[in-house]
Amino acid sequence: MARTRIHELLHKTPVGADVTVRGWVRTRRDSKAGDAQRFSFVEVYDGSCFASIQVIADDGLANYEDTVRSLTTGCSVEVRGTLVESPAKGQRVEVRAASLALLGGVDAEKYPIQKKQTSFEYLREIAHLRARTNTFGAVARVRNRLAFAIHEFFQARGFYYIHTPIVTASDCEGAGEMFTVTKLDLKSPPLTQAKDVDFSQDFFGRHARLTVSGQLNVETYACALGDVYTFGPTFRAENSNTARHLAEFWMIEPELVFADLRDDMALAEEFLKHLFKTVLDDCGEDLAFFKQRIEPTVIETLTHVVEQPFEHMTYTEAVKTLLASGEKFEYPVEWGVNLQSEHERWLTEKHVRKPLIVTDYPRDIKAFYMRQNEDGRTVAAMDVLVPKIGEIIGGSQREERLDVLEGRIRELGMEPADYWWYLDLRRYGSVPHAGFGLGFERLIQFSTGMANIRDVIPFPRTPGNAEF
Ligand code: 4AD
Ligand code: MG
Image (cartoon, rainbow, N blue to C red; front, side, top):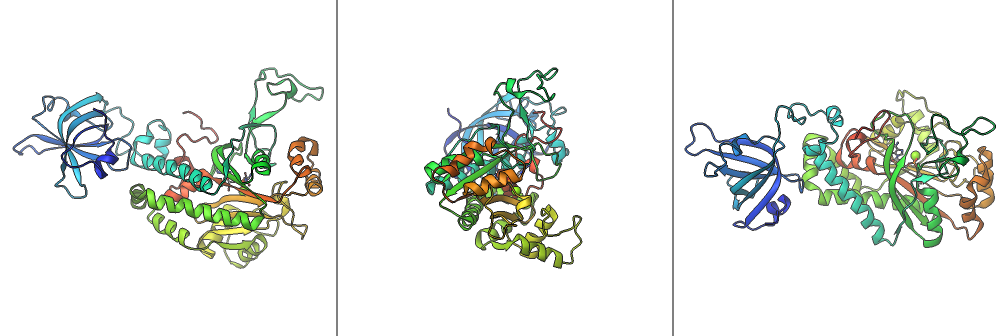
């Protein structure tokens, strides 16, 4: 008999149906010594939803004493039986077992997932098992729903999904924090006359690295197909050990054509609201858990964000506001410096108390491709800041003027020839266009209230960590 998923059993399957459940034991409770009949309640989960189903197994089962009575957390089982109405509070139905087979046992003494020892730090050391816990199961389901909602959002609006490469020769963000991809012999790599590594002899015939962003590549398709997006893994070799940084993270990058910064900001706001609304509508059970156990304000916050218009402020206004705040920041603020996470958080959490879009940053702290404003000092950039996280989206209108873009590349000490294909987009049929990048894990953090970004991706890659 095919298994019925617990989600279906709890919500759809009619009472009285014969069912087969396959899953893992969450807990077992036995009847008390004085009870007339010996029986056990076994909570079984199968990942299809947050809830487990209660199975009642009694001593009428041939293997009751030696199998059922020794079930412990994590054992895998197959239960056949009947779905009956549950007299217990908080559940519609339960399964009365006609048979219960142990599929895979667990040595309870050695099982690393113990009730008492489940700090997130500890669970990171057993990342291959942590998906079995309530928290990581819930995170995985929200992550899955959001990934799908991203495609739903763009597909409904006529955007094409473009697969951009992971191995690249260009540094999109210009920060140089990239991982090298090589087949050279690391013990004795070929050297140039200047004693640099000679990547022309490497697999790709050049210095290849893991991409920090799909943007430059996705722009090429935007300038041919119209509105597009890419959604894939990106890599940053920055040594930041924070609760918001990963060395490998997923990014969603739409690119809009015949569009300016206003269009870009409007899309970002509509996009985030769509995603948060989806979580509120479709992940209720998991959200209830996050509210109860992780972040009491998570549902309120998401609802508030969906309902309120985002706030807007230029970088120059943001700096003025921060200077006038009277707040003591660890990093001092002045016009021209990058906003630190503490500044971003103060602005969005304390000052406007909702998502805030900061625009028009100084050109010297932003990437080369951003469109220069008339004032000669700022660029048409925007960052979306949200409470607890700070920057969740970074985007801009792109410099579509060939001469200005070439000038900027030179000014930054880079070589226009290295960007020949990117510059071709401005050489042939250039159009105003704009886009942004949403960090997928920061989105999940905000949606669940999970404090550390390492706990919203199955296998986090951070400095010193790539075990699993
Ligand atoms: O602001 P960033 O660097 O923008 C870009 O990469 C542009 N090329 C995007 C574009 O215009 N198409 O990164 C975008 C977002 C950030 O706002 C943040 O949410 C996330 O990516 N992000 C990270 N998330 C986790 N770990 C890191 N190390 C991250 N760096 C950026
Ligand atoms: Mg950024």
